[in-house]
Amino acid sequence: MMFHVERGEWSSEILDLAGIPPERLAQPYPSGTPLGEVPEKFAAAFGWGKGIVVAAGGHDQPCGALGAGVIQPGLAMDATGTVECIAPAIPHFVGGEAMWRNNLCCYHHAFPGLYTTLVYNFTGGVLLRWFRDQFGEKEKEVAACLKKDPYEVLLEGLPENPTSLWVLPHFTMTGTPYFDTRSAGMVVGLTLNTTKKEFIKALLEGVSYEMKLNLELLRNAGIPVERLRAIGGGAKSPVWLRIKADIYGVPVETLSVSEAACFGAALLGRKAKEDIRDFGALVCDLVRVREVYEPDPERAKIYEERFAVYRRLYPALKTVILQEGGMP
Image (cartoon, rainbow, N blue to C red; front, side, top):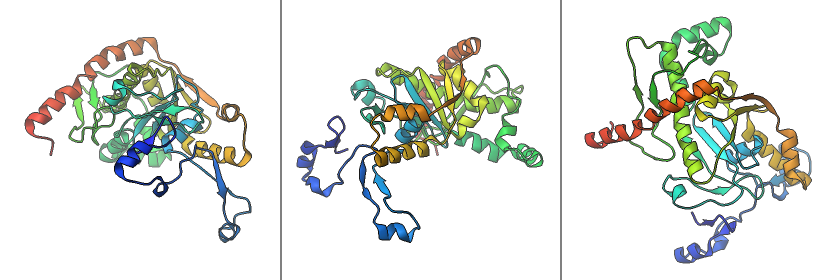
């Protein structure tokens, strides 16, 4: 919080107020800057060769965005792991009330000259894991017999059309924009006719609704997202990718390398080692789109209507929590 993001240096004003001399802080460098070489004695102890360059790296999500080729405005990375996180490429620093009010940061991208922000929900892919561990014994047994991934069995045969359920994915508090540690998960619309497969699909829809809400916040702050590039474990699920495309209303792309954060860090290492002049050309050449999931117009229309209901769930739950003095 003492860093002046636009100037790319420690804030002398804040340091003076706090009485902290700048030499007590680490020297900041742009991602991909060569910082020196590993000493030969140290390298030899690990069996490494000579001339190993140490490079400035980056935060995991910007590295993931870099490894996904998100280096142009309108593009964003959608990382699905335990947490669901979207990181767009931004050509200039964005501040203002629309960002601050919704707890949206703005800081340097791992690609030179760009900025990024993060919108995320702490309940991402972990929600499907929770269901697998608590209610998926049968699917795990079937998967073991067929030598399949249990998630593959869980997601087989889901309803094609949107469900009539709404899941508030706050099973591990919230992320942006609320940062509410007292919120909790909620499922609305259950009946005796609700099937297991409908429930599973509703979990995926709920996480995607929450991220659609965050995409709207980005657009209102002047950061429109026109295409998403999926990375992480969730990028391996065609079922979830189709749901995302339909709910977000924008194309969702998969890549030849789904572990994009590691790939992005490797790209920064190559930049430092080879002093590459046109880094953007290298990124565009190496990052390859494998498949594109386009939104289905009919399903997208239904999801848009149901999203209007979804966005009212948290305010309603928040009122209950405040009245009851917080969840246990």
